[in-house]
Image 1 (tube, one colour):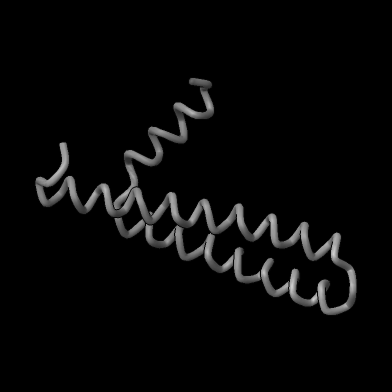
Image 2 (cartoon, rainbow, N blue to C red):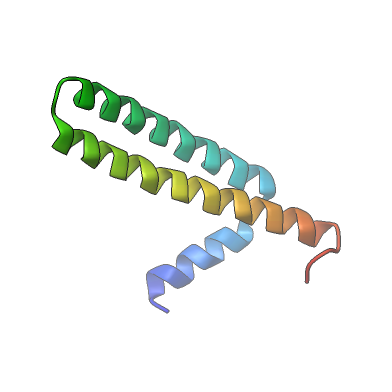
Length: 83
């Protein structure tokens, strides 16, 4: 594990479920922005740029899902469902 990965893991462990939800919302907003850009470029015939924005949107969606999963894990741990 790299030093950056270790720092990210520490930061994730310190976040509350609410903080994970907030980060998920931010990532969803960025994904939506890039989906809109992809649609605009596709409509204008620029499929290459549309594909780039779609790819970026997918990355943000993936990050949002990771934050959602972390929030769920914390809820489970708080309820004694997971150790």
